[in-house]
Every structure is written in C-alpha cells, then in structure tokens.
Image (tube, rainbow, N blue to C red; front, side):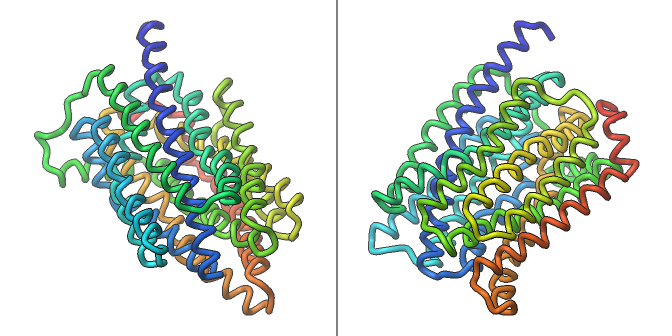
Length: 416
C-alpha cells in the first residue's frame, strides 16, 4: 500500500473517529444524568445497576448476529442505522420526563430500546477500522479509539455535573439526541469515500455464525485471552457501577462530575501517548503490568472516603486502561483474517463482555448487602466490593501472563 493511500485512509478513520467521539460524549451525558436521577429517586445502588445492565445487555446479546451482518452487508450503513435509530430510546425517556417525570420502568425501557439499535455499531466500527488502516497503524489508531471511549468519562461528567447545577436531566438528553445527527453524517461521508467490500450473501446466516465461532475458537491463545478478558471485565464492571454511589454517599452531583473527570483524565494522558507513539512490542507483558496496577489502584480507590484521595487513585486506575485495551486489541486483531473481522468481533465482544453482565447484575446488590452486613452506609458497602474486585483483578493479570498460548500470540501475529 502506498503512502498516499495510507494517509488518505487514516484521514477517513479520523473523520469516523470524530463522529464516535461526539457520540461517546453525548452518551456519557445521558448515562451520568440518568444515574444521578435514578439514585436520587431510589437511593439504591442496585437500581442504578439495573439501568446500566439493561443499557448494556442487548448490545452484548446481539453482538454475535451484528458481527455476521457486518461481514454480509455495508458496514458503514449498519453504523448509520445503529447510531440513528438508537436515539429513539432516548427520545422516549425525554417525552416521559416532559410529561411529569420518568419512572424506573420507563427509563429501563428507553435504555433497552436504545441499546438494541446500538448493537449494530460495535462490530461494524471495529471491522471498518481494519478496512481503513494498515497493520502498522493499528496501535496508533487504538490509542485514539481509547481516547474516544474515555470521553464519556473525561468530558461528559464535568459537563453534565455543571449543567445539572443550572438545569435538569432533560437538557442532557436533548444534547445527546442532537449528537446522533452529527455521527450519522460523519459515517455517511466516510461511506461515500471508500469501496464497499463484497459480503457473504452466498453463505447462510448459520454458516457465517459458525465461521465466526471457528476463527475465535480454533486458536487456543485467542480463546483463552477472551476468557481472561471476561474475568477482567467482571472486576472492571464492578468498579464502573459502584464508583458513583460511593462518591454520591458523601458528595453532591457537581462534585461527582468533577471527580469523574479528574479520574478519567488518566485515560486522556495515556491515550494521547499511545496515539502519538503506539506500542511496538512486549504486548503481553505490558498487558500484565497495566492490569495488575489497575487492580491495586482500585483497592486504593475504595479504601478512603476522601474525594482527593479517590481522584488520585482513580486517575492512576484510568491511566492503565488504554494500555491494557491497546494490547488486547492488537493481539486479537492481528491474528484474525480481515474478511472474518466482523463476525469474529461479534463473538469476541459477546464472550469478553459477559463479565460486565455479571458485574452489572450483582455489583449493586453486593454493595447493598455489604452495607447491611457491615452495618454501614451504601458508600462503604460499595467501597468494600471495589476493594475485593481490585485484588482479584491483580491476581488474574499475573496468572494470565503465565499462559504460554497467550504469549505465543505475540510471536505468531499475522498467521492464521
């Protein structure tokens, strides 16, 4: 591939990435606003976790068929449909609030509907990155993708916290809805600029599913790395779902927004470094170190009820995540054929993110239970569960790096 083509493709990637950055910020506003709204209405970590679970579960369940669709049809068109139609659920919640307030059930319905359409996005987006870039550009691009993902934690909480001090959650929903238009436009421009690859319409849907499963399951190292990733997402999910009730137990929503932004700025620093330099070697070792320290910083995050200490450990925790995500993405992406990327990422997303389902389904309940057993408030209960999860994450990271078939992925990348 020539330098001109490579430069042109990276420019298209940047346009697509800009759309996803905007979408991430808008989604973060809604997530923050609904979290504060539900906690204010119920005072329960379990209720917050339920909303998060229903916003996440459809995307997980539908990721496998969405991955097959990404290899059979125009990936950019699927992204446009997913982004555009996912606004329907948010619009439903907004209408309910404008008619006197949204109940927990109505919020759950809205986020569920939005998530169903969003399920089309992730496999198509990841496969499109492979379409646009060369292998040498993957690591650099992964840093920028991590940066876009971190925007919902870095930019959104600060903006949402400030807006909630002068308005209410309805304003956040309106802003989120408006971002869908911009992301659809950016994807449409990219769609016009690249050729659509022929799909697999000649194969049955079931045959395509089997091919996706085989490419993931046939390489022991890839499959084990995905299972390890599922364990990692379990502990990371516990942190994500319990950080807000922990802070809200002794601070207000504005402080929460500022605190989340300070914590997530660790992702900004790491993502910028990766975006400029990338990672060249020792992916498994860097993955081990980043996840081990992420677990230790989780422990520090949950110990003290002090916003400054929490922000410090939170910053360090988030700084580790882009390194881990970059290594995981690279080790898997470079060992899967390009023509199977969509369906493979569907299965990879489904398996690796099962940990989030367990975390979102049990994290809030465990925090409420811990608070009751320890005879303390919900903040301390959440802190205790975060501490235990951090220890487990560090242990899993060390054990993962000792698996030989995972180490072989770095030596055999590119072979199938």
